[in-house]
Length: 211
Ligand SMILES: C[S@@+](CC[C@H](N)C(=O)[O-])C[C@H]1O[C@@H](n2cnc3c(N)ncnc32)[C@H](O)[C@@H]1O
Image 1 (cartoon, rainbow, N blue to C red):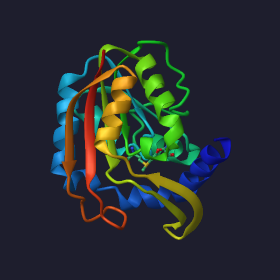
Image 2 (tube, rainbow, N blue to C red):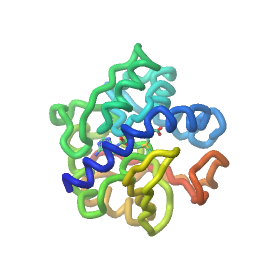
Image 3 (cartoon, helix red, strand yellow):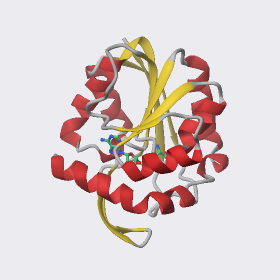
Image 4 (cartoon, protein in one colour):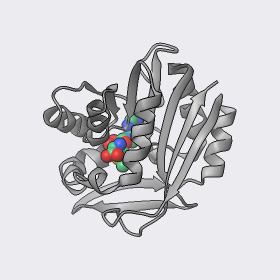
């Protein structure tokens, strides 16, 4: 587990700048993602945390919609980059499996293509951590690629890395959310955008509410 986290952290530290450049305009091209984030922004009240916020593009989008949001990421290079690009938003280094947040302190939590790096056996504990920090009625938003396999990358953007990208099935995620104390309120499965890393896979977004 520690090795896995260290590899993920080191991988994103290495690719932070290239990743930010590659995906800079992703949201501008993804109308359905903006629709989901817009609905989340309308529904949510109070403080919101994006876990695995990366370069902070999604965090900044939510901030622009009036959401009181901050970001947490495992990679110090990603956090430094997000702080530089979005100085009006707070970003901290942290692990979504052990958040430095009081019980029931949040009205919303977003994990936008970040749960994909959590080993399958740890996902229930991570969802329990999300449930712990959300108040009853709080909203959770997840995004992930749909599939069954783990895609391992030894190289990304010209850097040597060791990164695992785990595809997930919406039915499996819904069952895990239910077990962690969430009611699923919406799910969207859409076609991939051209900029997505090869091979293109369907993309899912799921909204859930803390019971
Ligand atoms: C695919 S990127 C997504 C970044 C951002 N949400 C976006 O959509 O552009 C995944 C991010 O999750 C972060 N991450 C992976 N495991 C994490 C963990 N256990 N806790 C916090 N962040 C994590 C990585 O460092 C990386 O920045």
